[in-house]
Image (cartoon, rainbow, N blue to C red; front, side):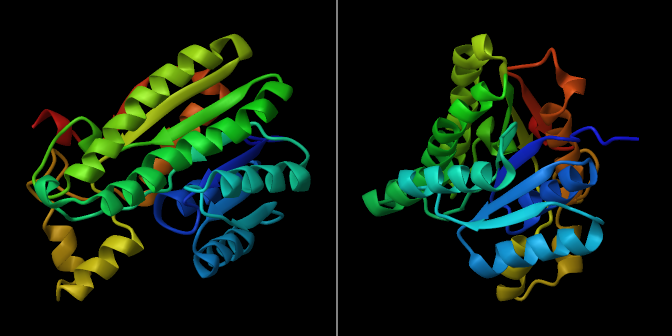
Length: 258
């Protein structure tokens, strides 16, 4: 039985690990040709190789690019189209975190986090949309965060950028609807990724301790696994969500209603 993304090509930013890599694997399992884009050469190569080993016959191409630079974002999209022949879906996962109170954040911090978390998505969409239109339509899935709708101390820059993606998604959905391009956004809660495990270890916190720390943080009392976020992304990318655009889906185990 053909997969839900058979004969389709997807480009995934932040594809070198975590949610991006998990989405790449799931898409490959569902029949998509996948371009993984990441600024980390080793990470994106490793993620691509892992997909090839896990999914027989997977068509996956790693692309090293810094989407915060418009020329790089365009090059990544052009590379995917040149290699696979078309583009039908874009998933924007790439993002960074900064741990600075807002009153202490300087211009350099703002430029960096806005570049990766907001402009990279805008630049990638700008480069991809002509190809999606040429294909007769397509899907764009942006990855925000539960903190795009909530606030907290110490990570205001991150939260600001994730809120910006919600507005960007709605505006782009309106603009591209006449071209049969659907645009939606998912807002994950805490998700256990290599980044979180590594950062915890640097503070002397084990993975088991890290996982236990979420017991009171949401209604299900645990972190999400990256694949649990990849499935909602898949839903927005395939035809099962054909009547949905401009939507925000909370994938946060109820964190946002506590």
